[in-house]
Length: 614
Figure 1 (cartoon, rainbow, N blue to C red):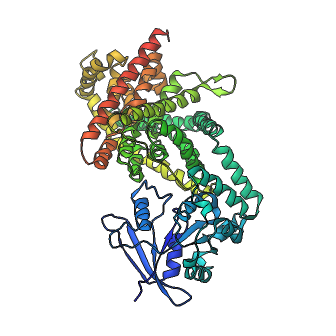
Figure 2 (cartoon, rainbow, N blue to C red):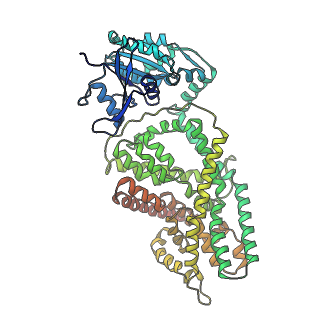
C-alpha cells in the first residue's frame, strides 16, 4: 500500500494560509507542536477531486528558507525533510496575498527553485479588487511555470480548481529560469512579474504605490520622517498652550477657593500645598500628552508607522540592531514598560537584551511634563527664522538626544557585552488608510485616562508623602521649613553629591520621588516651593515656572533637562526588566550605566553653559 501523499501550505505571514487550510480540511484537523519546539503544527485530511486523500499541513509563515526565527526554522526543516519521522512534503502549495503580490513573490521564487511539484494559490483576490487591483492569474502562471489558482479562502472560492491543480501537480516541474537567481535578482524579478500580472488598477492603488516609492526612498524617506517628528514637537507647544493656560487657571482658582473656604490648619495646607499644588502642576500638561499621542496614533492607524520601522532599519543596522528593535523602542516613547515587553517579538537574544537595555533612553511621555515646565520657564517663546518655534525646537532636540544616546549605547553594547551579528528584518507593510476618528478618540481617551489615573494614584500618594516629610518636624523661629524637615535633611545630604553638576537642594529633592514616576519631579518642585512660601501671599501667587526662574539659573535648568534625558525611568520599568531578563544582573547594570550617563551629561551641560556665559 502506497504512502499517503503529503501537501504543505507555505508562504509569507498574513497570506491567508490558515484560512485556506481551514476551508480545505474543515473539521478533519489535528493540532500539536513540532518535536522539540513550541511551534504549533496543524495538519488535516483533504480529499482531492479524484477521490485521493492527502495529508495537508499548514506551515508557519516565513520570509525565506534561511531562518531568522523559530517559526522560519520549522518551515525550512519540514520542507527539507529534516524533522525525524516527518517526511518532506510531496507537493507545495504556495499561498500568495494578491494585494501584496510583489513582496510574496520573492519567497515564492526561492521555493520554486527547490524543484518540487508546486501549485500557487493567489489568495484574497477579493480584497485586492476592492482596493482597485485586478490580476491575471494566467500571466502569472506563465511567468512562474506552475499553475496559479485565484482563491478566496473565507468564501470557499477557487477551492475545487485548487484541488484539481494539486491532483495533477506531480507531473509539473518549474522551469530552470528561476533556479539560479540570487536575492537581488529575485526582488527585481518579483517586481517585473507583479507588474506583468496586473490587468487593471485604479488611481487609488497607483497612489499607494507612488507613496511607498516616495516615503520609503532611502534618502527622501528619512527626511520626511524627521520633518513629521519636528512638526509633532512644534505642535506640542504651539497647540497646547491655550488649553494648558485654561487648566492652570482652573487649578489656580481651585487653590484660592479652598484656601478661602477652609480655616488655617494642617488640613488646608495639605490640600493646597500638597494635593492641588503638587498634582495640579502635573495635570496642566494633559494637553501636551494628548497632542503627542494624537500624532502617534494617527501615524499608526494610517499605516505610516510600519514604514518608519523600515526607514529606521538602516540606522539600527549601523549599531548592530535591526528594524525589529524599532517597534519596541518606538513603543517606549509612550512608556518603557510596554516597549520592553514588546521585545519578546525579537528572536535574537542579543538583539533583545540590547533593546531592553536602551529602551529607557527613549523619551517616555512621563518626561514631557518635566521638559515642558523647564522649557516654558527658561526658553523664550520666540521663533527661529520667523517660522520655527524655539521652545518646540528645544523639545525636539531633547528627544533626538535620547535617540542618539540610545544608538551610541546600543553600538557599545553590541561590540562588547552583547556582541554578535545583526539579524535580518522583514515586515508586512499595512495598506494606507485614513485614520478613523472614532478609533483615534478611543485611543486618546485611553492615553488620557492612564495619565489621569497616574495623577490620581501614584503622583497623589507620592506628593502627599513628600508634603508630610516637608512639614515635619516644624521649623524653629526664623528657620526655613524645608531645611528643618525630614525631606530637607535628605535633600541636603544628596545635594553634596549633585552639587558638582550644578544641582541645588530643591533639584536634588525632586530626583528621589521621580523614581516612582517621572512626572513627580514637577509636583515635587511645586510642593517644595508651596511649603517654602509659607504664608507669603506673593510667593504663593507665583506659578511654578516663575518660581523656577527666581531660584534657578539657565545652566542649572539645562543641566536638569540633560539629567532627565538619560536618567533611569520609574521603578516599574526596573521591575519589568528584571522579569524579562530573569534576574537582577541586567536591571542593576541598567541603573548603573543610566545614572552614570545622566550625571556626566548634566555636569557637562552645566559647565559648558557656565563657560559660555549663559
